[in-house]
Length: 305
Ligand code: SF4
Ligand code: SF4
Image (cartoon, rainbow, N blue to C red):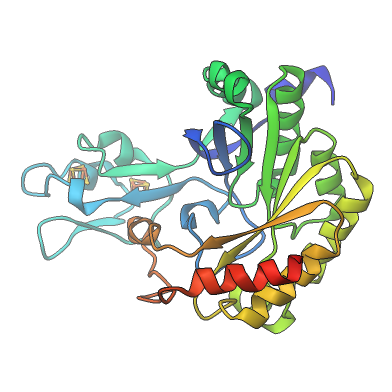
């Protein structure tokens, strides 16, 4: 990585501080835009497009009668009044100029995603350095798929290493192996999603085959024998929530030396964000039945022995 990597820039949609769930210790999560999958249950739907995305929260809108500044700001005719005195956005007409966001006094209109340099991101991350050294934490890259913007991701990891900030990255692994390899060179912990061993289910749920992510995990394990790798399975109703599904995944992980495995229960916290960006929530009212996680944990534990 050249000395110029600090000026490399990418699109970030959130920097979340004080996380204790995504790698060891207290961590700062840096969420990069863009993804190579389209999971039906995605908890960050604002991440999927690589570009900044306009968001509208009607609960914060003052109302067109009292305000209406966004209608004046939009010269594309993409904003109209809805039947309840608030606004409707025609996303076909929207040109992503974001003038309406600047005009909105109530922060009802916002943008998911801003271009940041490596230097800017690491500046925000290092503001919490005192927590990292005490807790064993550091920076975790997330997304979307952080390796969608692979040059930016690798530059962030390299610069964090140079500043002695511990590094972790979440990935679904559905990327060319060379991208993973470049990132792992600068990683302390790799958090790797294993969603389903069933090719047809994986394709139906995520939009992509599972062969590449599974093979990439095997290859990473071999190529980086000293790297801490934690496999994680989001348990999704109607997708992989049977004991047979979880046993198959646990079997696969068990074959990989030194790779731990954790089940993460599905939740619906992302539902409002779908509305903000003008999308239907694809999972509807689906939920995990009571007691299921305990049964699946037990099934996975039996495989681990
Ligand atoms: S981003 Fe620009 S084009 Fe789109 S709704 Fe706002 S002002 Fe109109
Ligand atoms: S500018 Fe903001 S608060 Fe005013 S009408 Fe538009 S969305 Fe609502």
